[in-house]
Image (cartoon, rainbow, N blue to C red; front, side):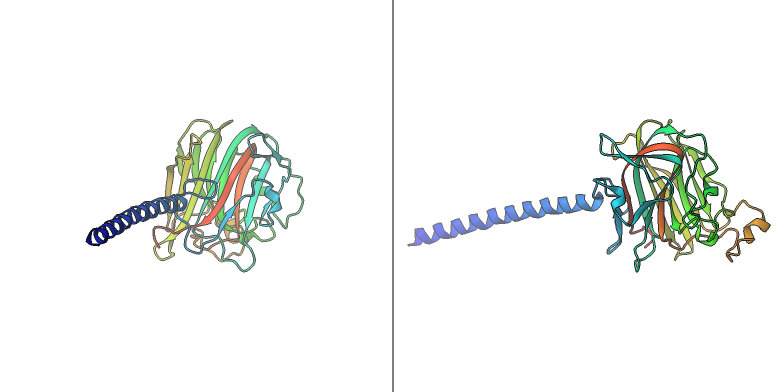
Length: 301
């Protein structure tokens, strides 16, 4: 009987040890998986900052982008599916917009991500959209060949100039990056900041472009950052880092700037959110994929 008792005890101890090992293994496994999920988005793209708890996330529908009623193109709506699953769009003024659903918080502290490949350029302005309730074509007449992700504004048109605020993170076809601020549309543009050449030409190759904006100093200033995935391999490098805490002035004359009646100083800091995030491209034909906007947990919070 004693032998049987000791045998039972031994088997029980062995079973407990095995169960503990299994539990530790699965706990570590699921912790690892959970940690990985928290660090990448639904497309498997690395996040710079995590999504804030309860924060809103938007991802393009790669099967049919415009089936999503929160996503629309201002001017050029013709897109074609490519063999690699991406979508091609082109025009002198491409504006792919992500809007805020009724009753939701405005886009403010956000990480905007997208992959793009420039496959052609357009040298003439040819906007066939005459609905100025949506967007004023005057914005698109600079003919620059670039990709610009922007946030913290609403519609950009001459009928509602004060809605047209924006923080704009840009990379152009020659690999130059910059940030620009628009205090109202269109007489509130500032000069560019953080202008650097960070890579070779991005023509005819995939790159990832991220722009991040979040308030700091108890909402008194804004931090802006941009990141480049230069080799299309999900390795992101920070290429700009800008703080606007005042002194970044609109470049228009006082007469022009104050003519809009927006009741803002000429170096207005855009700490407010905005209902629209825009993936903007000027003067190019591009393929795009894996666009996203996320409300982030910023380091200052």
